[in-house]
Structure formats: C-alpha cells, structure tokens
Length: 256
View 1 (cartoon, rainbow, N blue to C red):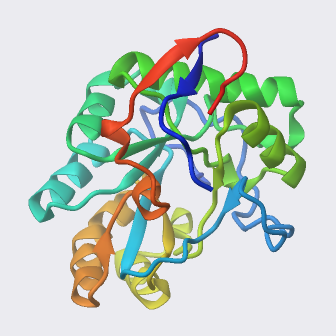
View 2: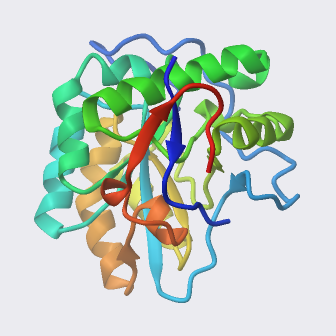
C-alpha cells in the first residue's frame, strides 16, 4: 500500500443504500458526534474559528452516478467550492466523476473504502480501509486526501489519535447536521442548514440523497444571502488549496 509524505507543513453515512451503488457495509447506527469530542486535540475537528464568514459544505458517501454531477453543476453555476468525502469502492467505480470533482476545484476527503462502522475494527483494519481509499484517490487525481471523515461519525478518540499519528490525517466531524439521511424533505434539509450555519461551521450532508441535492440550490443561495462564503475544509483550516499541494509517495510512515 502506498503511503504519502507532505511537502507542505500542516498546521495545527447514510442510513439507506441507493440502487446501483456499491453496497454500504452495514446498517447505519444513529449519526451523532462522539461523546469525547470536547477534549481538544489536533486530531479532531468539528468546526473552525475563523475571522471571516466562511463555512464548509461537505458531502458524504459519493460519488453517485447522477446526483453528484447534478450537484457539481449547481456549484459550478455559483462558483462555489465544497468538500466531498468519498467512499473508496465508489471512487474506482466512477473515476470520471472523481476527476471532475478535483478538476473543478473541490476538495476530496477520505470516507473509508466500504463504509463500515470503524469503531468496531482493529487499528490494522482501520488503516487498510483508509489507505486503500487514499491510494485510489491519489491514482486518479495525483494527490491523496489530507482529511478523513469516519462513516456515521463512529470513530473512538484513540482511533482518531492513532490515525493522526500514523497518517497525519485529522478526523473531520461537523457542527451542523440536517439529518438528511432520514429523508425529511428538501425544505427541511435546507431550513436546518440555514438555521444552524454560522462562521466556521462544517456542514454535514449526503450527495447520494435525492432530497439533499434538490435542497442545495436554495441552501447555497440562502447561505450566500446570509453573507457566508464557501471554502473547502482545508482552506477554512488555513491550509493551501488541495489542488495546489504537492505530494510524493514514500515507503513507511507518512511524515510531515
């Protein structure tokens, strides 16, 4: 398995399967933040303190063969950037969509290979899920993900610290959750996001849900109307734009 070293110094799920998509590994537990995230560490991020009114829209579980391209069209029409947390077995199934995400200036994050509940797995199996996905994304885009989001948010503090130590990948959780995986309807998804969003918010959503994608035009316009600007997760954290970063493959552990 290829592991990556960064040349630039770093600072600092869904409940239902969609027809035609590779199978998600197991039924989803309730999506909620782990109870220990109040313990501050560089390995875990739920929101970012920013001096400017910036938010990060994030989309999990893709790519989807039709919904993700439709979402990309919406973002392109508005000149907005988002962050996509992709599942590895879907990355290799729809490589052209993955390349399009990267080519249009969005960030790609790691969301595991097969969407299991990682809290139930050994460290070795966790790293295998993550490394396979990073490798697949690297082969398609020329760069690996620099952040990770666990399926269902299910990832213990010890696992988050282990991942940060071994792969330099911070775990990105969220501060706004519209619970779109429950399919509450497009207006509800939009209203929940608009109500919860503020400077530094990381907004969780899923681009394999039709209702979510339908909610996005009004959501994007509503967030912009509130004076909020869009950035990728890395940008909001003060890191270089993902597309501008340089990486090299090395053997052994990842080094900063």
